[in-house]
Amino acid sequence: MAMAAEVQGLSERARELAPTINGLIQTRDNFAEQQIQVLAATLLEILHRKGFAYVEQVKPRFVGTMPCNIHYEMLDPLNVHVLLDLISGKGFDPSLPKGLAQEIGPNDEGHAIRMKNCELVARSGGLLSKIDAEELRIGACGASHTTSMLRLVDAAVGETIPSVAGCERISHNGYVSKSRVLERCPSLAQPVADGILYTIIRWQICAECPLLMETLSEAQNAEHDTFRKDTTWQTMLNIHGKAKRLNAQTAEDWARVLIIVCRGHDQEFAQSAAHLCAFVQAYSGGDKPVFLRELDGYAKTLQSRRELPHVFFGTSRACAFPRLACTSSAW
Image (cartoon, rainbow, N blue to C red; front, side):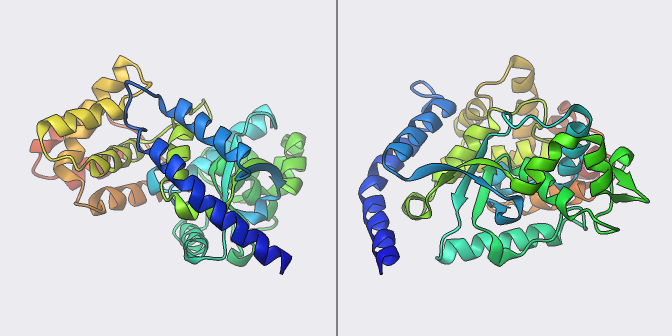
């Protein structure tokens, strides 16, 4: 009874706070007034102060990935292996991962999060460790690749998870090896066993503010460090998401999309983004965007990838075989 009353109390307080949170989120594209990291910091300060955010160390097996992470692509299985190879050589610094997650609640959204995580593992081609969906307590949109990496190491006993090209130092007979990883990087033993710290957002406020975690995830993506950056496809999915949110129809609308996407980046990125923006406008595949997701999914099945100059995508608008042009970029 006491727990039910507490949940009901949180739900009522969430409904009272939601107009403030949703109002702030609506300003996220108003770049003359506010940068996304500043907005995220403001939101988190309010959530902590109002009791809708807290910090807790959570074991990897209890942590999934939020569907909104990385422009709704969740994560890249190959990058999980690349990250593991990188960290196993340099050592694990527990102060670096900025864990951010949402509680997985006992509602329809919670069920959807669990199912999306099962789908993510299923389409990874064996590169991600299996999960027990019912065990998941939170879904990460910050340190999501680190979390998946820790879960992968813990599961890498025997021939369970195939290794990828270039990661032979952490594998044995073609499979990721937990013993080899921990022998090479003893500092991973503790986070593999006990997990990392996460700032966790209560599910009640997320239910009332459907764009909250997407906004916080976007802020996390804007802070990419040397461990991860967006692929070409992820950047184009990001462009598509911005265009959809702004209902871009005219040339002026798409110019606004480009300004939004280039926030916080240098001139070189802006030039590249202009080519990618033109490609998305011509070939995204509609509202979903089916074509971009199909190509991104194909690229994730490859163990070796090479990037073409982004100017190629701007000129490929006139190409008679855009699919060939796209798949070649991931070869």
